[in-house]
Image (cartoon, rainbow, N blue to C red; front, side, top):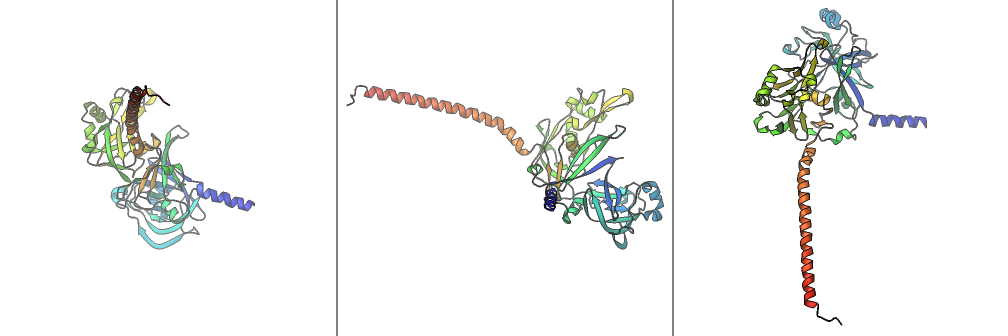
Length: 417
């Protein structure tokens, strides 16, 4: 009886319990905690978003033997960390040949070199086999990468793709949400939650899937672009919304031709060129009221970018200075506002590589927009229909009265037997 109950509870957990992986922003980089090998070794791995095959450094974890081969890099970046040791892990499957990662000097200053290893990686309570470079050298690499690097992009399989391939989770889909917290010194910290092993019968899947464009990045097409409710779609050459780098902090990017268009207003031009508004407490002042609100309409969703999403208030020590910083920039050919959408609008983003689509949980949909447009139209027609019905009924009533009167006049002298 108890065994059956345990099996039932375990089965229910496997079906309905979703997993959470938390990443924290430290010194400009996102970090996650994991365990690798047997016995498991605690690791702090860096996350990179939005890479593709042209500039990816690759999956790697630094091996303990790097002390011997690259002592300078170890002393500078790794000496305070617990390093993985492929030779001491009983589950490590080591390829004897040494390979270089495909990193580019332009992006990273160098590359990593080591053995390809397959070992057990543990994320949360999920264990799976993970293939990576066990790095023993980091030639000319000039940045710290903690214990190693994992990437989330459209081109490569990420850790959730690998988990799904090994049937330890139910779906490849994952949801990104962001929130702020504070450390012991009350310094704000940005956190990102990866929600994975999703329940495909949850309300999250009731929101429509927006198909992505073909290519190597997470991006969708914009079909309508509005500035303060004015349609400027025809003036914008590139109508792309990018979600490939979801956490570019406090910066909204818009296409360059749209950026130039809004600066035709001399007041907006002056604010953007200055980059800030002095003496504007909490970014609530007369000048912020003239900043534009953008509406971007995709196949399934209506996104709104309001001034509070691209302004931030800075207060100096002892209140000696304060100003509102403007974080709106022109970009080559696309919009980018994932961070603001998640943090300020509280819209989680679901990434669906298998179906080549994205969902935006809780965001206004095109269907809602159509309903809002139709409501006054329907109200007008409902009112018009009511008037027509009343007039028709009145006409029938008058006709009935006339026929009745004629009948009475023609038959009033007829005697009924």
